Image (cartoon, rainbow, N blue to C red; front, top):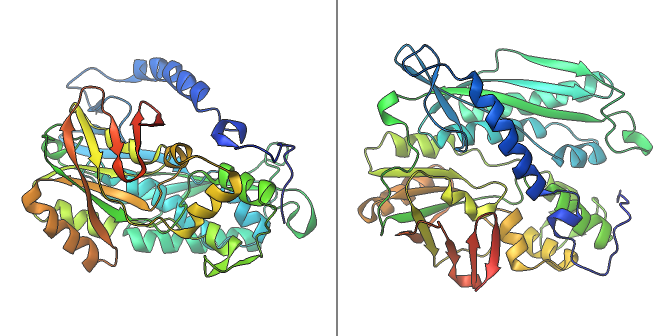
Length: 373
């Protein structure tokens, strides 16, 4: 079940070597945004865009009602699903990646639509994907009023060979929610000494699977059906575990009356997602729980540095709240009452450069990378 990439196996892969050029992505994104912003209506108009591009979601004003909107996919995790010929959980990831982002502007997720591009319209595969979408919608308390399926055999290839040949697909979605226009949360009021509460992830989620696949399957020469003792399951089952959906605990925190300053979905860029706020805020992370064993396995097999691991992966923290110290214990209790472990992992500082110090590992994040202190 391993895949071949032709990458040498005697050095660290890194995200770029694994095929993900984040530098060029940022340049391309900057150019794209310049054009997209030309579509925005004037202030005071119906559909006024309330936030600059760069937050987890944006908000438009529909006659005094704030509509939050975001879009995301599940990335190369679709290849794991195809290689295992198991498609009943990938829809949960699609819902999670969208609704978790909506939460970060203080929105209540309401509904989402999916876009499914397939190599062939295989009925069994489509039904399994629908099962996952529906389970994700149940967990997120949203509806799925429609979507789109496109057969594109010239474009969608997937993993060739064996029983899975012809089952290539890509899955993405767009979600909307509501947020009062005077309660949009973008971290504008964070102050030095506020507390960062980190909520557990359950593994890789839906980011960094390109590097994970290359480290584990190519360099590590493991197979997806290999039973890994430290994981307590097969490698394939571990990589296919659905992304946590944080809707229940986040909405309870939002509506609890705590002095909530910001919410962050920890995806690609890891804890650097803490800096996606309006205020000039830096962070000191002085405690982290032991990361799930899959991250140690990726680091070992891929010979990755801790700096690279924290740049690519969530490393065990999937969602964060920034609150006043007086509210920290209450937020932890709310997360735990919804079945998640949560921890006080650090505090905020005033820092125009928005550095993230991860003290237990002796690294600091600046811009889009982590460096050894």
